[in-house]
Length: 378
Image (spheres, helix red, strand yellow):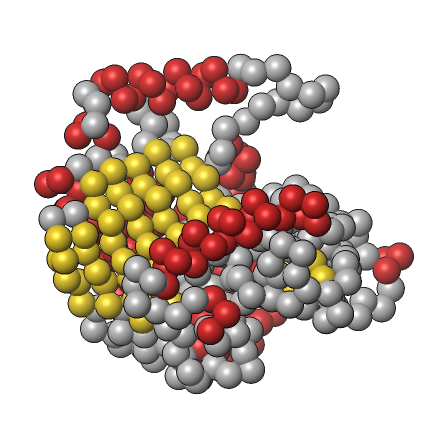
């Protein structure tokens, strides 16, 4: 339980976490994580995929699914949950359908592979659906749809996760946070990106607020008795998106994602998966992911598609807003965070920074210097 509520930062509902942080250059942080994952026994492709995904997430402001997950991934790697040297296998099942067997490796590697294979199929048929099986936690789902959109494809991505979300009107976790992402290329700019959990908040926001000492927003989590709590240490379950009164909306989305990521991949639904946070870090997680890629010029002339997307964004951002606010498109806050973090470094919360030092000492890897210590901002 939190000991001194009066000293705890007031809970915030904004998408970006705030804490007294250390800032680190992207290149240094990526190199450190790659080296650490490899020293933990992983092959180079796995280490590069993990580092690419978590640094990308942190650079966009997704701190809950960014570099703070590296200590967790080291536990799954050294504990035996994650195969350090997987032999991924891709099978084309139909003209527009493919399957990636992740061989119990890192979900980041399997998801990037799924997007790469999906691009090949979409080039031929205009659309690709790729199921991923025998995978593991893959961090922020938007990393993979964004990778597709940067190559000109619209992409939908999703994954199921272990049970932490109570059904609407329920008191016991059944669904995972079951994130969903949709990315669309934008001519002359960054892709439009939706990247969201179908729970009220991501599970990793609970872990992050435990680490930073901040309260949770009201009506997003329940304790072991199913009662509402703002104490991240007491939280045993999350409410679905929509909260106490309208959680049936998030529960419906979680249902859809669970079916696509289990029945269509041959994996178990969320309530059957080992718990993300342990204590068992030796049993593989039979987790599934599901991706859909669309090649725009197979649906509309490319020029027409680009114009429609540009017109949509211009009209959306020009809409009248509440006093002191402005209407933004999905991904706009993250775009602003990206610019800040490119200029001023990627923030690492103090608890994660301390754990990085411990891991660096344990595995003989030099911890990156922070910008406060005079390191490069690149």
